[in-house]
Image (tube, rainbow, N blue to C red):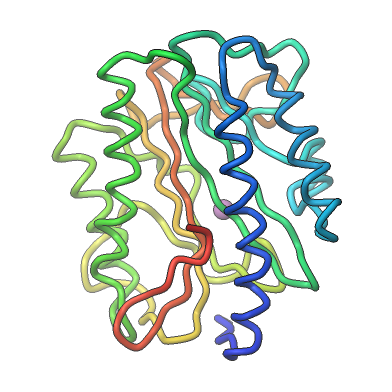
Length: 248
Ligand code: CO
């Protein structure tokens, strides 16, 4: 069952998403060589609490932090640590969200730390662009496979790996709702999008093979070949003639 949200419910999601959007601006400013991912996590936790929101990843299936902080070849679900000190030239993907008044938000960005390579910057930019390519085909009545296919084609034409093992998702009263939103797929397939559906669309992209593995902490997803990875995610609502991005 894919739930359709009312205008009132979307207003509530907009408030939740607004907090997550604002928090990215704060964190972006703090991302510099020398800061630890644990410090970023504490800033995020305090920010959500101060605004009456609950971090939605914290304790989700036992996840131990507010944000996911994934560095270089880490794709997603990197656990913040006092031992992970950001260095000049690193890239870091931050994924986070909250529940405000019963409604979820979820978004991710990849940032460069200090001066990064042209290759890393291009990976970050193209990952972000693939999201916008994907949403450019969205409107009421379009098949979900068209969105997935558009994202995949944009990325693979540029030589990137599109992660298969993790996908985007519906979002609302729950962090993960129906449908699954893959970043790969066949045009014309899948469910028909309808106005009022709310989705977290989140390309996870590697500079090499799409294959991934999980570290011994049972959370951190890394590229199998050690290549760099980037992530870009927004919570969006489908409308009659397009979509609205709630976390941007
Ligand atoms: Co998500």
